[in-house]
Image 1 (tube, rainbow, N blue to C red):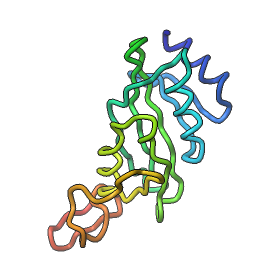
Image 2 (image 1 turned 180 degrees about the vertical axis):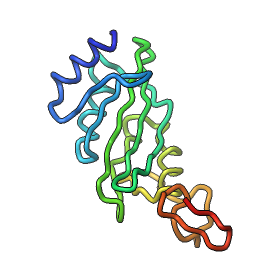
Image 3 (image 1 turned 45 degrees about the vertical axis):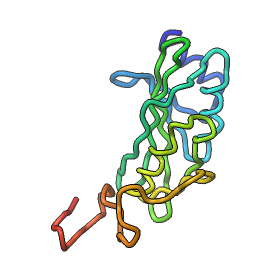
Length: 152
């Protein structure tokens, strides 16, 4: 399926998703509360079959956080980027996509550790890189570390 066809299919299937062509991939943007609906559609619909999560990351835009999912269909060889916006930067949380893509387990643990995002229903959400007593989230733009002189 070409990007234009993917865009039409997703637009018809979900009124809550904003779909646009990005620099490289088709980009689908949703609010965090709408993530599971569109993610399930992408994974399970026979027209889509996005069965491979090849990258998951987070971006701090100061006013909000965005979780970015790069997905591929190994059957149809098409790719999309799914972006979920988290408005609450004080206590950010979003549903885990582990049940859909098991590869999300370590991506989500890394994002939890370095950005402070709580992934609801994650099977083993714990720190991955930082010590248990570490204060703050080093990849957040508001992070300050006076001891190591790290500022963003």
